Image (cartoon, rainbow, N blue to C red):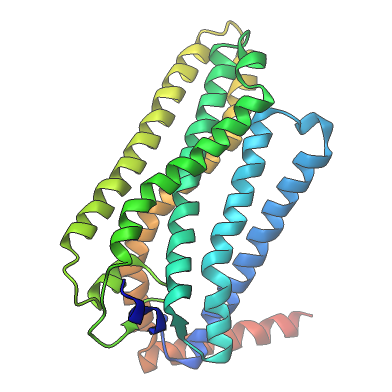
Length: 294
């Protein structure tokens, strides 16, 4: 983007202008954010303090928790502050920074999941090699390579994005800086950068997903060869935390794509006067019943 664009300020429309709905959204996101912070901080502290958790699997899990804290902090706090203050403006540099860290942290998570799958593969399929293959140095290299890969992936679209000009009103139809609404307000041809983003996004999803699938294919085949049920159960239990994280992460991608449409429709419906009154009535009735019981 040209130098004059550095002085640009964007306006984030958010999700709704209704005060009541804004407070509902604020409370939901606030408590979700606090719970996420608490859960991930507990994981980090426990894996640092408990000697029994000084294993490669928990090292990767600790790094993933740190990524989750950073990722949610990039998105949620600023939106919560904008609801409280009513200030929806964001500077050009702030928007670029939010986009950069949003994609950097998100992409790093996917490659870290692939590294965690490799750790589980070696632990179960190559147990004799596990102590040497997953030494501390190797674990650090795998985490670092996840970050490096993410930087390399976002670098081309970032350079292209910095060249965008904005001729239309600088209003972003979102609660954060995201590529799609930013492209909509740009007067520069964005077809090439959109194609680049799509190719890189699909490459990240497909490559990391295939690495996870291949790892677990070999893991499951190996576990099924174990002679006793107890051994198989113990082996599966060592993969449970990673499998949950994988399911949530890849599931959230599908959810996010669907939620952008669904949430917009949902907020539009909730803005209807009859629906709004019904929601207020249900909440007031719930509060009264709670106090009557107490």
